Length: 184
Image (cartoon, rainbow, N blue to C red; front, top):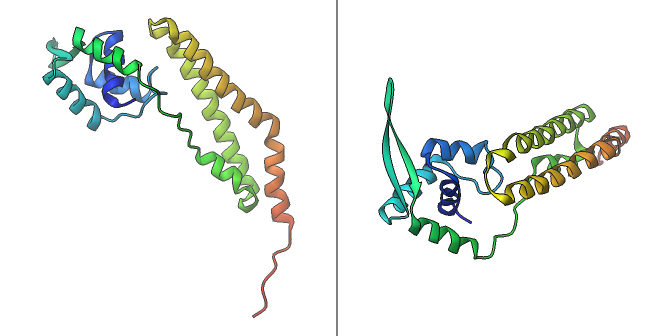
């Protein structure tokens, strides 16, 4: 899936400005699907407007510049529907925390404990984000997606809570080993 399809998905739910789309992608209920920056959203919207997939209108704002609001057209809905029939890309999962965990024996135990605490807070915040946004999307699958996200994050949170001591012990044991210096 690409930025273009993500914009169409958002506009399929309702009219939005480019700023609102970026906000939904960065911290809203569409933040778990595809990364998109202002530098990719606005060119995609402009291209889709030229192709007749979206239309825009200017809305006046009191004391502010006019805002450009985008709406999906029937051609845009058709392209979005067609995009939904294509196979999904494999899920990507990257975690700097897991790199720290893998290298636990090289870490200071206190630094590792702080990293674990930060990861726990991150997972809790992501769960709260899902809970805050799942009701905002008026699509039948939104609750299912929210439940899926909760299951993944809850599993990670529970695993970390249950196995934290094992990881911390790796760092403590490594610090307890004497350092061997090679003879020259």
